[in-house]
Amino acid sequence: MPEQLISINPANGKEVARVAVTSNDELNAAVDRAWQAFYTSGWRELLPHKRARVLYLIADAIEKEKDSLARLQMQDNGKPLAECRGMVDSAIGTFRYYAGVCETLESSVTPSRSDYLSFTVLEPFGVVAAITPWNSPIMNDATKVAPALAAGNAVLLKPSEDSPLLAPELARIAREAGLPEHLLQVVQGRGADIGAALVAHPGVRM
Image 1 (cartoon, helix red, strand yellow):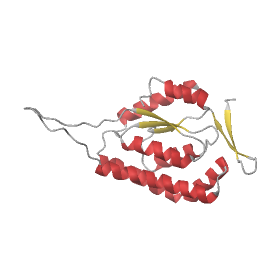
Image 2 (image 1 turned 90 degrees about the horizontal axis):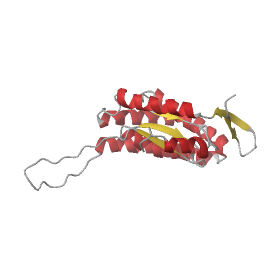
Image 3 (image 1 turned 90 degrees about the vertical axis):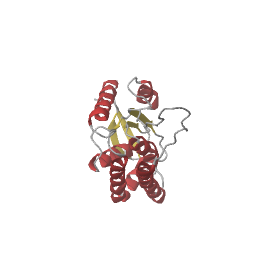
Image 4 (image 1 turned 45 degrees about the vertical axis):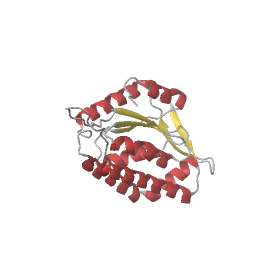
């Protein structure tokens, strides 16, 4: 049987759920899928306002599931329900903020000093790793995932082994809201194992 992470409700010590730990082979496959999605999904070529539309839809979808997400986080890491609701609100705001950034982002160009044209090209890195701590899962996940997606990247999200349940829900919501498949994937495991492998992986550019 594959190794599993067990989510324990700190309030009562009861088991909430189990998730499978990502193996090194599965990590390699996830990186390959991420690059495939980066090159073939059309996400990086989308005009910024069209990427923004998807980010807004993700925010709306999170808002629709606010109560269930807050209750899941409460069970997963033990924070009071009111605080968990506030963190879901923060995640919603983060996706809306970076959707707005997509629509309004500008860059500067130094003045020309000779007979030539100067311009700036903004390009995504490719596959980005996002590693988040246990204490505010949905909020921290959004803070790392939303800007990376807004810039046109594919993302591999590794939540803390102590609070593994929110990241898969965020990936599901993003996919259902219209984000192309495999642009946001979740890998699970301990920082010393899968986290270290993720950071050291030659297919992860940032």
